[in-house]
Length: 430
Image (cartoon, rainbow, N blue to C red; front, top):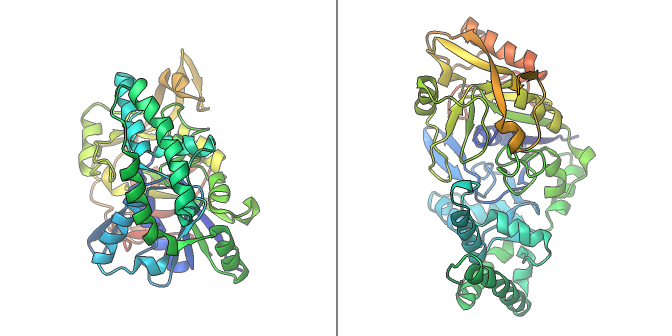
């Protein structure tokens, strides 16, 4: 029988999920994105060549792997076709490898306008969204006024419902945000034109996945963002608009929860965060600067500089519990090479009280002071190492300490951006 493996980020995103999904698809027949939108930025480096994917699953560069976009994803037609065009220019036959759920909620220009107007109005209290319409599209989905990919099949009905949607949002744009309205006719024309290219790829992804399961195939479920940005379990309101935890794989792809066999949590050897929100281990000193520069910590989607800090075992334990992690993939260990000391947050101090339990919501998180345990660093480099025994003794001790604090084994180590720069101690598909 095949195995269903979920790959999720365990921190605030940018953990290196794209590389691992690309690596693991060598053993998979299909890979499916189950939440988020083109706010994701999954970077792949294959034989030195860099590819950044925002919407299309990271297995698209593998011949013979069926890629799918599940119902939990919010789909921007313009962004999708732009990404397909870039890949096709590189010789990747995307349309032969990609299928899209008819139930995907659509992101339209009116959602982008609302997103950006709302962030501008918030001023210093802005969430720090990518401004790509993700949140407003999810809002319309839950409010049951949104349009779905399958609606592109009926142009007349699509036009009618789009008009109602645009009128609703234009009222808010003009009267509340004092912003310019969007052009209904232009949105309709452009979206229907893009829809002609998208319609041949539409399908029932849940049924497609069931067929793969019946054939005994391995399937990979690719998450976006990170568990600490989950709409329910993250640092609310500084979160994304979807369920980024492993439970979202079942609802966002159309499979049953008991179908999930293994959950791999992708985790940086330190912590980063993009945008606003609490960050207990954040470093504003030379160590933080070192992590940012050596780790090239700039968002693959927004280009924004990431905030950097020590590894946070408290929030990581929370992620392990929320996601029932089977194993951890530790990435960017090489960024710590050459540091004289390395910190790990083992607990929080809140109003003088020490706790090992992560709080709920941003307000409580803001009050947290990180309790840091220092460990010795290591000389030399771990970059490109492919055997665990070749790692410096202090690097292995650091990994063991993370395992002890989190309660989950590190089963994969990434020692560089290329798919070959990896130590696999235990394959999720084994």
